[in-house]
Amino acid sequence: MKVLLASPRGFCAGVIMAIDSLELAIQTLGTPIYVYHEIVHNKFVVEKFRRDGAIFVDDLDEVPEGANLLFSAHGVSPEVRRRARERNLFAIDATCPLVTKVHLEAIRYAKQRRTIVLIGHEGHDEVIGTMGEAPEAIVLVETPDDVDRLEVADPHHLAYLTQTTLSVDDANRVIARLRERFPDIAAPPKDDICYATQNRQEAVRLLAQEADLVLVVGSQNSSNSLRLAEIGHETGLPAYLIDGAGDIDDAWLADKETVLVTAGASAPEVVVEECLDYLRDRFAAEVEVRTVREEEVHFNLPKELRNLVESK
Image (cartoon, rainbow, N blue to C red; front, side, top):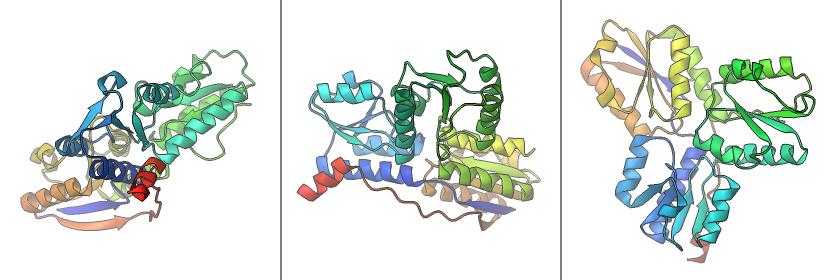
């Protein structure tokens, strides 16, 4: 068997920043430290931090007053920040800067009194946080059909934003329908879908042309990982989203000569290596790294942590 190992894959700059932030917070502040929502959407990462003493919560009522709290990479609404201040929590903001960019765009468009059409998945942590910036001004759509059903007060005073981890193709279909229905709709100055999401999707599209099957390492609640598996399916290949080597079914790989392996932006490289070792052991796989695009993005740690470290 030949394995094409996609590059880029795995951790993006936002995930690295969030994980480094939680590790440093545990080292500096000790435990327990509370995290609002999963730090990133990956089972392996979350379980590792649970063992280290992090406590993941979905409601600030679960956090004792005056405790240490870290906001996950997906961002939070102003209401969550307000309640954290009310409870006298020491809050560290590990929101990905690319998510913060979308929040700032929502605030700007709301000040212009535009209706904001947010393209995203209902219930996703990032979407909840973004909608919380201007709940009275934002409507959520997911598909072109949702756009067809959309009713707005002023069709000439709209703007759209997108969740950062969407499928580029899916988002473009919705955007095309929005522009069709509302030609005057305003667009963000730069794409909201993050560079890492776009790069990983591009790698799957290109490399799938040489493969018989796609394995995506990532968790089921990871939006960007799910999109990678969907793109594999769209190319006509069987594609599977797996948390790790234990999820691989040998029957999938029967008679497969070339397998494409990639990983979502929240999936650790150590898990990818375990999967490659499994393929080597079971199928004598030879691994070839295929680089589609180089990534050199880096995000600074949250200022709360930098200040804390400098004061020590």
